[in-house]
Amino acid sequence: MKTSIGISEANRKTVASQLNILLADEFVLYTKTLNAHWNIEGPDFHSVHVYFESLYNESQEYIDSVAERVRQLGHYASATLAAILKLTHLTEKYEGKNDSRGYISQLLADHETIIEFMRGTINEFADAHKDAGTSDFVTGLMEKHEKTAWMLRSHLK
Image: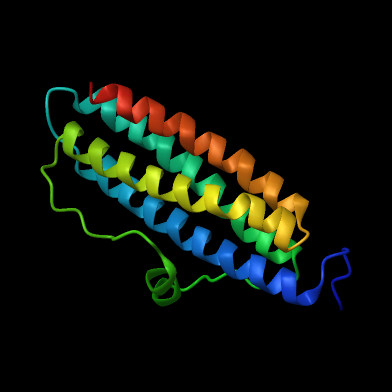
């Protein structure tokens, strides 16, 4: 059935493509957060282990919401590991120590990369593609990433 929501097919396709990049970034970040949760070591193990668990639970919600937004636009979410690795801005590699400082530094950098990407899409979605809904959605998600980045950054001081 045709998607008729007041946004042209070309605009919905472009926005969905950008959202699939965001989805890939969110999925890689989720995986890296799981890695940190599973492999953290050090004197602050318990508190950081618990914190990383809260982060990956949040990430799982973000992934689902981005994928559902793609579907709302009448397109399909990229859902294979091959597609995710092809689309993401992030690297799945982690080469630091298994301590909180190393993992938190990496996760902070990834959150900041995602924030910068989202910030670059907000006005484009609203203005060029006439999709205020996705622009608003991305703004809200960006604010959540900004809060997490602030918390991660504060741990490193």
